[in-house]
Every structure is written in C-alpha cells, then in structure tokens.
Image 1 (cartoon, rainbow, N blue to C red):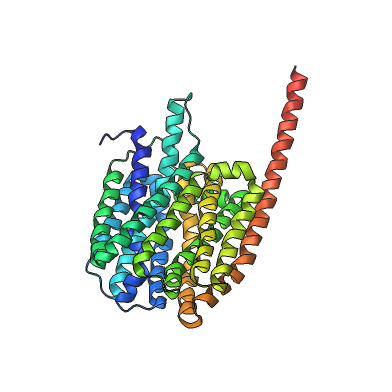
Image 2: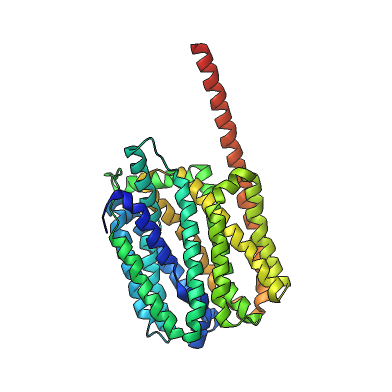
Length: 414
C-alpha cells in the first residue's frame, strides 16, 4: 500500500472502521457473566479501563504532539491487538482486568492522535491545493459514521457467531485487531509545527487554551457530560436487554441498529445543525437522552427498548457538533493533547461512578438505576448547555460588532 499523505485520510478511515469493529462488545456482559462475574465486577473492569486511560491519556497525547502522531498510533494499535490475543484464553476476573489494562493503554495512545493526524493531514492538503478544499468538520462526521457502520457490521457478525459459540467471537475479534494495526502502519506523518519550547511552557499553552478561554472550557465540559452519559447507557443496555428477556443471539442485531442509527445521524450532523440552528440542536441533544433514560426506567419490553434510540440519536449528533467546535478552536500544535484531556475528564469521572452504577444495578434493579441516572444527569446537562449558550451568544455578538466595524472602515476608505 502506497505511503503518501493523500492516502492518510483513507487509511485512518479504514483503521477506525476496524477499531470500531468490536464483535465482542455486543455480547461482552454475557461473556463475563458466563465466567462468573457479577455486574459490579463487570463495571469494575471498566473502571480499571477508565483509570488506565485517564492515567495515560494526557501523556500519550502530549507524546503524539512531540514525538509524532503515527508512532503513538502504531504502538496503540499494537497493544490493542495484543489485548485481543490475551482475551482468547481469558477465564477469570484477573484475566479480564489485564485485558482492560492493555486496551486502556492502546486506546489512550491512539485516541486524540488519530483525530489530530486527520486534521493535520487535511490542513496540509488544503495548503497544497487551495482550489479544492475539504472542511475539517466533515472528517468528524465521517468518522462517527464509519465507527457506527463498523459497529453495526460487527453487531451482525456477533449475532451470527454467537450461534456457533463464544469462542468464534473471540477468534474473529483477534483477527480484526490486526487489520486496524496494518492500516496504522501505512500512515505517514503530516507536516506541522512542533513546539521546541520546554515542557512548562507547553503546559502553560495548553492550560491557557482550555481554562482561560470560556468557550473552549464549556465545550469541553459539554463533551464530558454527554460522553459520560453515553458510557453509562452503553453498560446498561445489555443488562437491560437481558432483564427484558431478549436472547443473547439478538444482542448483536440490537447493537447493529444502534450503530447504524448513530452513524447516519453523525454523517448528517452538520446538515442537521445548519437546518435547526445550534439552539434546537442543544434542546434535542439534551431532551432525547433524558427522555430515553426515563422511558427505559418506566417501561419494559420493546417499548422500553425503543426509548434507547433517543440516547443513540443524541450521541451521533452531539459528538460531531461538539468535537468539531472544540477542534476548530484549538491550535494544531497541541490538538492531540487537548483531545486527550477531554477523554481524561470523561474517564476520570467514570472511574469514580462506574462501579457505583454496577452496584446500583445489582442491588436496586435496572429500572430503578435508570430513573436515578436520568434524575441525576438532567440538572448537569442543563447547567452545562446553559453556560455554553451564554458563551455562544457572546461570540455571536462580538462577531456582529466586528463585522459592523469592518463595514464602517471600508466605507470610510472608499
């Protein structure tokens, strides 16, 4: 495969497709329960994953900014492939903890660096050919769509392979991990400015970007809030399906539906935002998941399962809108670091609250847990979106004032 800058975008797309082609995800909870793990232990494995990601996320993003995006991506994909190899003979709580540790390291090295390399590549290509430009935000839409479609195909594969046995799922997952690694090896580093200053000066730049710019700060908090909500929902889905009597062989089909829907919404997120405006996008993004959680908690069977789609639609929409808004306001020099810090915040919160979620499901029941989640998350989401809305209106007012001033200046010049 030719190693050129122009092929970077295609190779990143394929790498993300196979990274999201996680056949095991659709049946992960039943798999661990088959080996005697409780829901509390399942969520403890995820808390360890979140801890590893949180511990290594920012250093790995900073490493990608200084050492190179491709280098960290390749190592990350290699660790993910190793994790799938470890999963083949896994049969104990400790085995799954080790698996999650390897996955956490691999994901932390890849995440942030992949999006940063995509932005750097498109910037370089736009500079090489100024007549044919592609908006950076389109890539986030496509990535969300690709990840959704990859998850959908893997969900269908999971339902089919589950009929043959769980071992078939594990072996298929093992081989898929190496496809992602092969595309990572085909990437090339994009030209960009690399900081030659000291670590303290670099840290000061990142802090100034994320803390002293109110818009960036509130976008970051919005991403964390909605990402955390998505994590909670994801780990409730399979237990919820099981509680409502859905056969394990159907889990893949339901997961495929979720992924396709998320992918379609993500693919058209920019058009949806342009048509509705950011105010209505905020309302939809907040209302759908909260209504979905309340609906899941209040209803059972297929009506309750239908309410899960609200969380899926919101996830596909807000991921594209908020991540694009963040990356547009961050300099390419430390883009991977900033994206990693956002992930760190989400994972850090999940470390504390993930096991509590598992405890609630084991002791309070699935439906009660969902109602508690909806009640707890509603004021947080509304608060974040309220302050983000204030900053957007300030930015719009300032832009209008600048435009008016520029018009006056041009008139006087004439």
